[in-house]
Image (cartoon, rainbow, N blue to C red):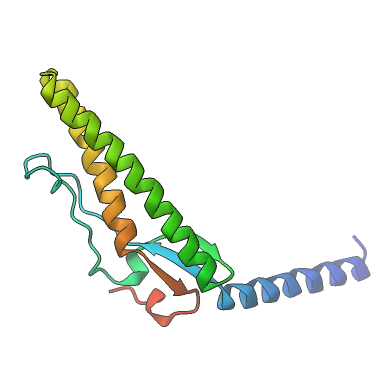
Length: 140
């Protein structure tokens, strides 16, 4: 690589980093709160706790968006999908109970239903946050 090509390459990389940083500063993140470990010994639909009091820096980044409205639209769509998935798994669990399914099958179906329920609650607690929000940098 000649000196000229190396210099042009470095300038291109620096510009790319700057443009990417500017885009990120103006973007939006869909953040989803963490959840507890699964506890099969609690009452039905209490197997997971949504830890929405944790700092935003500990929440999961579902994805990045160009605008708050795009972020909210995706959030609402994901919530509708997860509610549908939960509803179907809940119906399957209730059916398995009614049919007297064996304990292993009931345990598995309950776990699936609990997880799907937790997904709904996590998305209900999720937030669209500007990517440059200072709370994302906190590590408490």
